[in-house]
Length: 67
Image 1 (cartoon, rainbow, N blue to C red):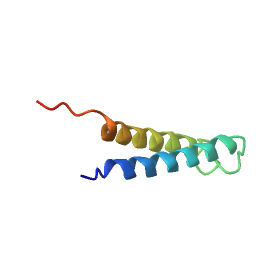
Image 2 (spheres, rainbow, N blue to C red; image 1 turned 120 degrees about the vertical axis):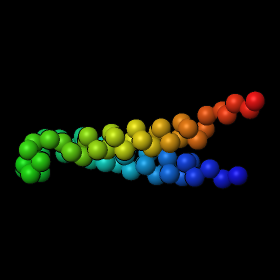
Image 3 (tube, helix red, strand yellow; image 1 turned 90 degrees about the horizontal axis):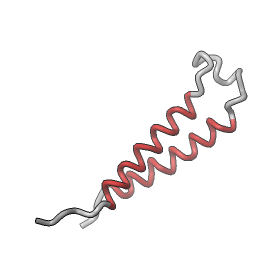
Protein backbone atom coordinates (compact mmCIF):
# COMPACT_ATOMS: atom_id res chain seq x y z
CA UNK A 1 0.00 0.00 0.00
CA UNK A 2 1.30 3.45 -0.92
CA UNK A 3 1.62 5.93 1.91
CA UNK A 4 0.80 9.50 0.83
CA UNK A 5 2.94 10.91 3.64
CA UNK A 6 6.18 9.99 1.85
CA UNK A 7 5.77 12.18 -1.28
CA UNK A 8 4.16 14.98 0.74
CA UNK A 9 6.99 14.86 3.28
CA UNK A 10 9.62 14.88 0.54
CA UNK A 11 7.96 17.80 -1.24
CA UNK A 12 7.70 19.92 1.90
CA UNK A 13 11.25 19.03 2.97
CA UNK A 14 12.73 20.05 -0.38
CA UNK A 15 10.72 23.28 -0.53
CA UNK A 16 11.64 24.07 3.09
CA UNK A 17 15.34 23.61 2.38
CA UNK A 18 15.15 25.86 -0.70
CA UNK A 19 13.28 28.65 1.11
CA UNK A 20 15.57 28.39 4.16
CA UNK A 21 18.67 28.71 1.98
CA UNK A 22 17.11 31.73 0.28
CA UNK A 23 16.45 33.27 3.71
CA UNK A 24 20.02 32.64 4.83
CA UNK A 25 21.58 34.16 1.71
CA UNK A 26 19.29 37.22 1.70
CA UNK A 27 19.44 37.95 5.43
CA UNK A 28 21.65 41.01 4.93
CA UNK A 29 19.31 42.59 2.34
CA UNK A 30 17.41 45.19 4.39
CA UNK A 31 15.47 46.55 1.40
CA UNK A 32 13.97 43.14 0.69
CA UNK A 33 12.61 42.76 4.24
CA UNK A 34 11.46 46.35 4.65
CA UNK A 35 7.79 45.46 4.01
CA UNK A 36 7.89 42.74 6.67
CA UNK A 37 9.24 45.11 9.34
CA UNK A 38 12.76 43.71 9.04
CA UNK A 39 11.72 40.12 9.81
CA UNK A 40 13.34 37.44 7.67
CA UNK A 41 10.09 35.73 6.68
CA UNK A 42 11.81 33.41 4.19
CA UNK A 43 14.02 31.90 6.86
CA UNK A 44 11.22 31.50 9.42
CA UNK A 45 8.72 29.96 7.00
CA UNK A 46 11.42 27.81 5.38
CA UNK A 47 12.33 26.28 8.73
CA UNK A 48 8.66 25.70 9.60
CA UNK A 49 7.98 24.02 6.24
CA UNK A 50 11.14 21.93 6.64
CA UNK A 51 10.08 20.78 10.11
CA UNK A 52 6.60 19.87 8.82
CA UNK A 53 8.12 17.84 5.99
CA UNK A 54 10.45 16.01 8.35
CA UNK A 55 7.57 15.22 10.73
CA UNK A 56 5.58 13.79 7.80
CA UNK A 57 8.56 11.63 6.82
CA UNK A 58 9.06 10.53 10.43
CA UNK A 59 5.47 9.33 10.68
CA UNK A 60 5.69 7.64 7.29
CA UNK A 61 8.82 5.63 8.12
CA UNK A 62 8.30 4.81 11.77
CA UNK A 63 7.64 1.21 12.65
CA UNK A 64 4.04 0.35 13.30
CA UNK A 65 3.39 -1.85 16.32
CA UNK A 66 1.31 -4.85 15.34
CA UNK A 67 -0.60 -6.30 18.26
